[in-house]
Length: 116
Image (cartoon, rainbow, N blue to C red):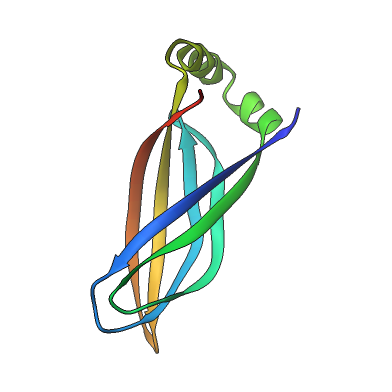
């Protein structure tokens, strides 16, 4: 079986006067509640008082997902055919760095993705 690549843009707004850096080490990706793997990104600069976007990407093995989730996967395929969409959830932490200071931000975001 093939691999599947998921790309997403994480959009942030920094209302503060301070800039800094964001690092993303391990954000888990769930498709219709099936854990398909993780995505990561290189470290990014955080501009002060601006909205900014960080591109995220992850490649996942369809055969591994199938082997680990045979029953759930069939239900997801049936739902996908009926609704023409998938529910994708991202969970994990993004860390903000400013000098020696570091703060984790918890990510738990869902989005319905249309397959049309």
